[in-house]
Length: 152
Image 1 (spheres, rainbow, N blue to C red):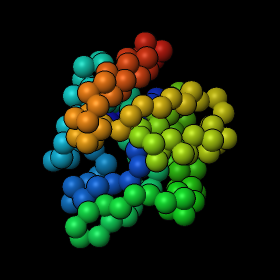
Image 2 (cartoon, rainbow, N blue to C red):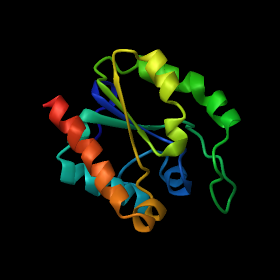
Image 3 (cartoon, one colour):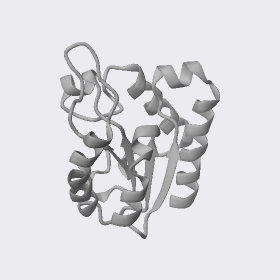
Image 4 (cartoon, rainbow, N blue to C red):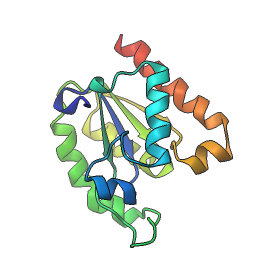
């Protein structure tokens, strides 16, 4: 349902959570609050998912059977080559949105690998983020609305 190799906007999150592991995909359709929050702000911003693709800075699960753990610099370093391979598959890419603080640590890498792409940042859409600071939802929405305005 997403844009795949034709995507114009890449959302780069931190790492898949346990629900994504169960589904096998990074998706707004995963059965968790983060996915639901992100799905809703995309719809509200009018950003059609066929123009986007989602990925994780660390594309493998970094937790145990109980919970995900925070990403480390070593995790990000180990995953860097996978990001380079992904970016090479996206010839129509115009935006990369770094979603959350851990993914934002990849900003310099994304800028180096894709110098013609606009790199933006926004807060993570997790329930902890949205519920703890409600203004973060508005920040995510503003970022996505900006993407929509530039794509159209």
